[in-house]
Image (spheres, rainbow over the protein chains, first blue to last red):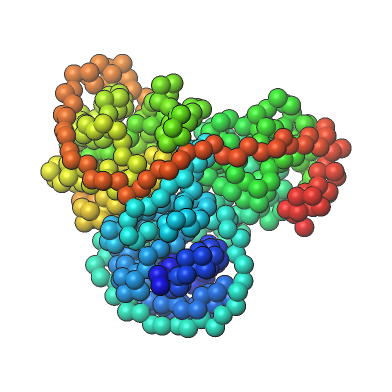
Length: 317
Length: 250
């Protein structure tokens, strides 16, 4: 019987939603492949959080605790995770396509001699192997690939799998967590304001473009986002113009997102923007130009002046 | 300071990607190739460091003949040395590219290896950390602020909704994220000087790819959307549809 290993990402001892999504995916794969699932949790005093993994079907959790691992430390996390993977004989390793996962997975791949598929949006067992779908060119095309190595590592894009509960009593096993030599030392995490959601993690995004005419009008986007509990995004044009910070940019040279709801306000829809957001489940476009390319990918559109439409939305929500 | 910048040539962001007949690759004939935008940031950062501390900036790129134009772009910005690792094609598996790059990088005794956080074509986003493991160097990945004093590096690495403050010692690997700097345009003088630099050509034995592309497809086409209406009057209907039809708001 093979093993699927799920890396349960945590920050501030809070398990990330992607861990529950990956446990849900692991359960589907485990059933089809007749595999078992092991979950690995790395940090300091993270045991308390481990129980939550049981809610999403983790029957066995390897808890790797060390004060030196409170923050993400690239070499140490890679070392401990590689040891856990070897010890458990994992054939498939699922991680999140998060900033931590994107740094950790390639390191793990080198240590395990494994191939790595990043930012996957679909995984399907086929002929004793895995068929993996991952976007390229920021989503302009999708490649179906397979990994030829014995151990396969996949990072899964957040929000693609819906986390489904399957309560189990998680059996916690302590696993030695020797941090080893730290070369890349993460000293401190500086969070932006707590209530500010990152676009890659958000289920709803409100993005603004050049149609807003100037940085002084972006309070409309902020207010609408607040009303919806959404993250705030921006087009490349407004980031290039210095109206909004880089972190908010959605598109090929910004962030690629797949939220449930994406509202594009005053964004015409340049090809490089569309590439970054067209896999969103529901897209709303608000633009005064009925010919704007954004309407081609939108599920719902309003043709009109955003300075009238957006305040009305804020008022009516 | 002896700096290497690993660069990749990629299709322009405005490119409409066309899938080739065998559905396993992308048509290259109509593509306008550019220097990967994130690598451009890496080149700029290397040049800023060279201007402050002296030394050499060597750009290194792997791929077929065509990638030499990306190398020339980096030279035109101000890099003064270049190595072209000539291969028939760019591997599908970044692990293969990394093995070849690591071989060449080892020989250069670089203090700093800079590269973009990802290439905007295959979007693997693996190269920095793979090189770090292979070369046993620290790697500050997805960096927006870089400060160097002596051999010590202080960097800010972007994470969801914030930053990690990363400290390491040279030799080290840094991958560039937007915000790090504003890449310069090549000057006419730079373009002329770039033409005089002899690009060192290297050949390597590539490892076998462990990623196999079975098929490339366009994303499924969406059914045409609905124009709900014009102006603010359409807002109540839009909100109703989002609640009742799409069920994406409560």
